[in-house]
Length: 452
Image 1 (cartoon, rainbow, N blue to C red):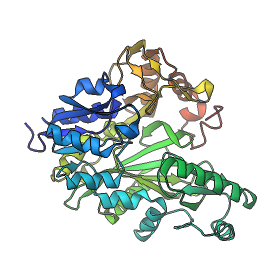
Image 2: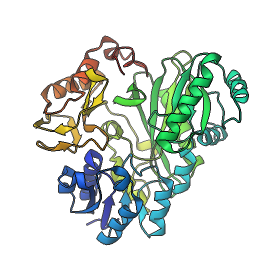
Image 3: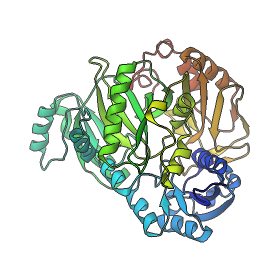
Image 4: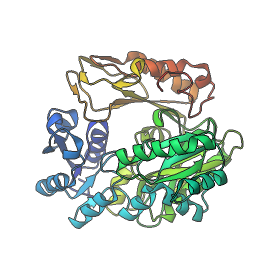
């Protein structure tokens, strides 16, 4: 049995809830699932040691309803709460409430979440820590005239970005001064709708950059370790589609520089737990720039686990219990190559429209070095209330060529019937000559697929 926690509550659903529960089970920790009315028959509910209802289907009344989550933890005797990703994972208020109730939040301190949650503030913190940032503003403006003056100083093209939130919302590309006012208004409306705050800032826009991120782990004893890079350049409207580790664009020297910057960033905010520093890599200059820090486990953490052999979720749990990291920087080595394809219940031929409905056939691929993280079983109803992610297919190979070949084989074995999915899109990406050659960037998909 584990000496960490005896029981944790997982404040999430789907594949990430099961992923966390699997790690907990290996550590000898009992788990509590929470579920909305729509999820009473969901796979994560069946997998947990016990389950507790938290409200109606809409997430605002269940998975985002803090009093219901806390009540579930108290009633079931859980000692800690793991938020997964999404929902309450980056809510500093939730992290603080957990502490108030004597519950351990399996994540970073509330102050670190808050500092990194305001992107304009995060820029200022990173600059002070010596982490490269793109030219831009650290604050908003009081008038259209001031916005124009600031924009001219930043230079065009630029991005108008929401200071709060994430997921690619509240962002507009501005090619020229004439487009600024409309972009500001659209970004502000979208930010207010998505995050309840319309605060904006400006940042230089890079044409066709690569999206490179560094996974970090930190404990409460001052240790911070970087686990190498992931490439997440293949995106749809800034939502990641396919990830890999390592990146064809990162050599050992660049990896060292980016890793050192990521460690400085984590130290600057007193970080503990698992986090990711996201950077843009300029293909023209070879320089990298801070974009944001995700203060949680990420969907794509699996590819880092595959090439490092480090169980990131277990490290999160151990660190939250006060233990030191189980790995040192000198122990980190990257072995082989790993890819992850996200399979969503969406129809790419209809502008990626969500495709809820009943799963009729669900046959996952298998074989050597194939990992499928999912929260789906045949006959399950895909709900319209939540994120459309069904599964993550992850492969490993001795090199990129083998990892890609293995992914092609795995996706060819995957059978899903009853809802539209992104399976065929992923297969097409894997056959694209530019992808095969590693010539990818953040506009790769938009240049090839209508509606992307």
